[in-house]
Image: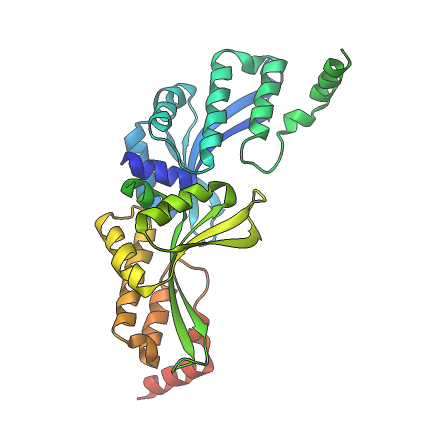
Length: 159
Length: 159
């Protein structure tokens, strides 16, 4: 099962970290790490097997349809503790073979920053945002373009 | 390696059969079965590992870019002998876990029809086309809409 999960994650998995505006947090942004595997509804059992294997995570149904007009299912692990205790040790032991390995490395670095409290300082979140921008995604986090970040970066450059 | 290949195929693999117009064949259509795994250029080594494992197939570079502005690579096995002797026995031994298992089953049925010469009769290709239409794809094969097929189907219905 381990080999299959690594292969399936190399194919369909995603180590994702989002930065979301959230006024209730100290710096107005929330760091949101997530391990996700997406599949069409017809392959629900495959996601359930993964959920059973990791003994954590939830399967969410997405209203969006995929190319084959199926509902999309997302297996997600969002709890920091479960990411740290179950997901990360597994992929450290059984290495990914595709370029996704680099995303996983950045993901681990971000989790470590969060665990050390850096997600609640502007400097820490800037560091996290740069890690995210190096992950395999299309656009830079909006955080890096926010006026506050631009002002602080300019100030730093002027010192 | 076997588990990883099954998982990766469940994620990114494709058992595909195309029907292509080809005036040089007896019935004007050619059956074109293919096992394909697509990846961005950054994950070339993963495809090379699969190629080494199966001891067959080729990696083609596609000019098209994927979402991450990478060239796409396609690992393809097209030889009927290699599909029959290497790819099919592997996935019969190590079962796929997603809905792709059904595509694989149809794929095997089509390969068997080809091996028994049915790809060079109109009736055989019609059978193959119906198998294809039950595979996980968006559109029906054009063969099923060709005037020749429509005429013959109507004739059969009138008998």
